[in-house]
Picture 1 (tube, helix red, strand yellow):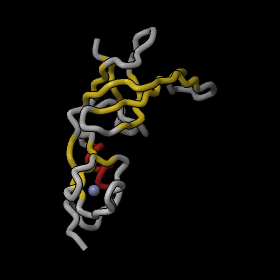
Picture 2 (cartoon, helix red, strand yellow):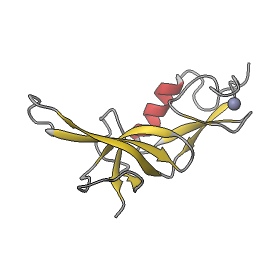
Picture 3 (cartoon, helix red, strand yellow):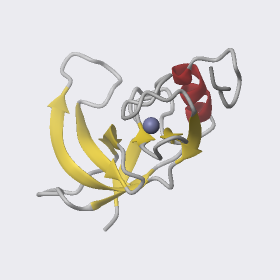
Length: 130
Ligand SMILES: [Zn+2]
């Protein structure tokens, strides 16, 4: 069994959340086949290796798709949330929340991580670069 990087007792998800709480958006890279991996896992989804290391994303990507979700009956929360699939430059895709999305079609536009925005949210926040 190969050595895990970071805290040996933490699960990959716990390690990811710990990094997320400090404002970093991390993913894993396989040291055997170089694949970029997200969501955090114990083994590489491409080659099965356990030799994965955490890397920090630069937080820049492209909007692949997006949707507006209404949240009626949720007092205190935003009534409409924009969720997007963002393809990061490092080669991973993730679900993100868009902060103040512009009107119109934003597919293909550049999205930039808002590092410390609402870290308790399930999804990292991005803003469209205009
Ligand atoms: Zn691999």
